[in-house]
Length: 97
Image 1 (cartoon, rainbow, N blue to C red):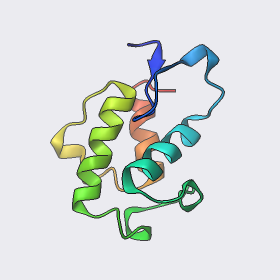
Image 2: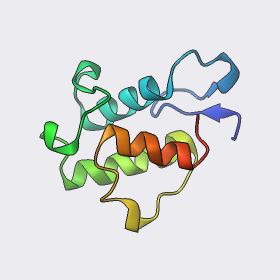
Image 3: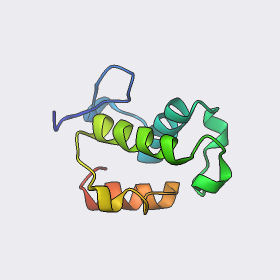
C-alpha cells in the first residue's frame, strides 16, 4: 500500500497520478471526517476553529489519517495533532509527501 494514498472514504489513488497537494488531501480528509465544507479548512485551521473538532472528532480524525495514509499514530501524539500545520508536520516526519 506504499504506492497508494486512500482518501477515506474514497478509492485509493496511485501517488504518481495524484495531482493533489498533501494539504488538499488533508483538507478533504478533515472536511469529510468532521462534516464541514472543505472551504472551512485552511492551512492555518486549528481544532478550536471548528466546533466539530472536539475530542470525538479528534479520535475520528486520527483514525481517518491512519487509514488514509496507512500509518499508525501513537496515543501520546493525539493531542499534539490539533491543527493543520501540526498534522502536515507529523505526516512529513512519517515520510508522507
